Image (tube, rainbow, N blue to C red; front, side, top):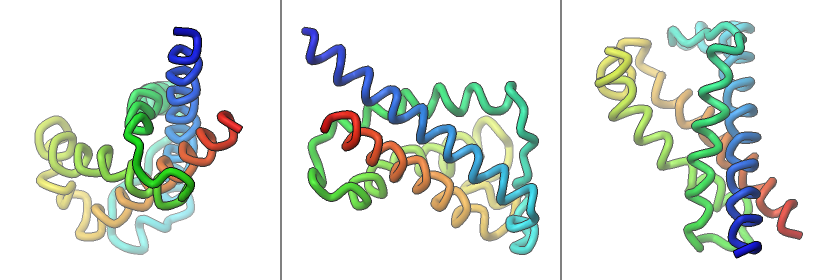
Length: 135
């Protein structure tokens, strides 16, 4: 039981850290005009109200690391796990909750690419934290 609680805590913390890195990556890309160069309207303001739910959801997504795939391949594992939040963002959140169309194309043609990059930052960060915390 103690090992299970420790493992779940590590996964949640890894996901939260990944959520922070994902959010800061999106914020930096917007603040410094990287998304604008590609005509993508993603330029969030770095506020607690924007950041907090992203960190918590990142932590929840950390449960994906319970899936025993790509063990020993940290970057590959992180990229694979990032597929889950990417698919949800592109095909559920954008069209049904944010009214930005399928894949967020109302925000710009390259929106899916940026979502993939931002979520890859989440996955790789979380995978490295899992590896670090378990060693």
